[in-house]
Image 1 (cartoon, rainbow, N blue to C red):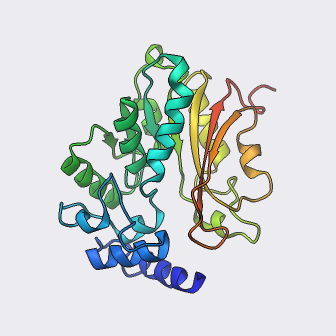
Image 2: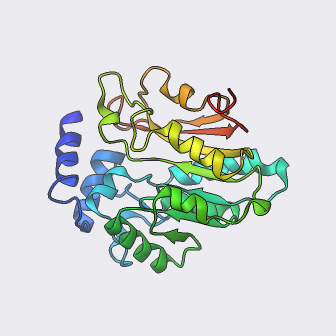
Length: 260
């Protein structure tokens, strides 16, 4: 089972890395990654209609993006968590890639969505797609730190604000023991400290995307002081260590390091 996946991975991150995939290539990726040729769906648009509607999926995006229906399931979980708050918070997707998570969260929750993508080609492709979809996501070509400083002023902040954090994994993903969240680029603890500082330590919600094999306690250690609310584990389609999981936390006022 792993051999077709790694062969596909090599092509999607190699010769097809920066190329928009054809419908046949999307079908192949859907079959191997998602278990069915038509299952590589984004923005609520199935694979068969993506190219017909003028939407572009780069090779690397097909591999790395959060595909439907996972963002919709996350949106439903957050809607349940936020229901008692009676607030209209904002969604901030700091490493948005395809923009699919922010698109679904904004559509389901009715919150304003601010998204950042640093890579010029990924940004241009996502900008094109969101424009074609008439999405309300406010997409910025920026580093996540620039995004944090560009957000609405603190009086407009809410404890129900949602930060989606999925930094590039790079070499951190394939250590012998699994994904090491202290070695992502940038490291997850550093990102969360930047979020805290940007909010003057006002609590918020964070959604962390990982795979299903995490090094030791790197997730718990990165979220030190935060309250775990839910972990969403989609049905696995790939060998252990290659499937996605999503963790929802309430980020505390201060990290253990900043409280000393």
